[in-house]
Image (cartoon, rainbow, N blue to C red):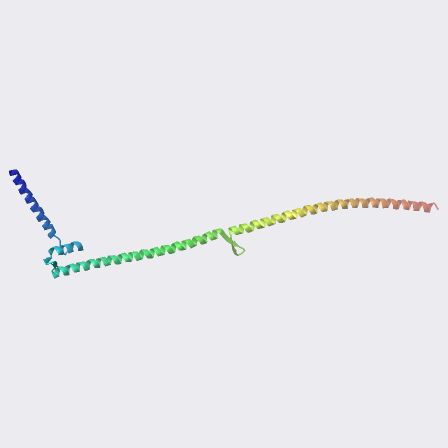
Amino acid sequence: MNKTIYLALFATLFFVNVSQAQESTEETGSLNSGTIISQFDYLLRISNNYQEYKVVKKTNLDKIKANVLDSLGVFEKELAAIQQTVKAQQDKINELEAQVQDTQEELAKAEQARDSFFFLGLPIHKSFYNTIMWTIVAALLGAFLFFLYKFSRSHKVIALSRKNLAETVEEFEQHRKNTLERERKLKRELVDALNGR
């Protein structure tokens, strides 16, 4: 039984100490430090009740108003700093986008310069130049083959003409020899006839 009384007494003391500790922790806090929420909670705790209303001291209300305005000022400064940072970053983004645009334009110009060159003072794309060159090569090859054909044909005609000329010269020589022979024969006959008279 003594143990039960001691235990009950000990439990009662424990609960009294815990409730006093809670009340003392609830009483802590102030209007000079802590967050705005904790200051409002403190203001509610220290304010008096009148029917369904809370009665707040004017000094406490002025103090919390000043604290709220100070906090708003800090937040406005932070917001202004953040907005300035955002603006600076947006300016940097715009600058980088302009640089990217310039780089893309330079890349396009470099690719165009790589793929083209000036020929007779005119810019020509390499693929168009290749097409022109292969067209010229094909035309020259066609002309070469055409003239080769004409040359071989002319060569055959010339060879035939030379052969005919050689035959004509040979016939002419034969005819001349025959004519000379006849002339000699006639001269001899004439000489014989003149001598024989």
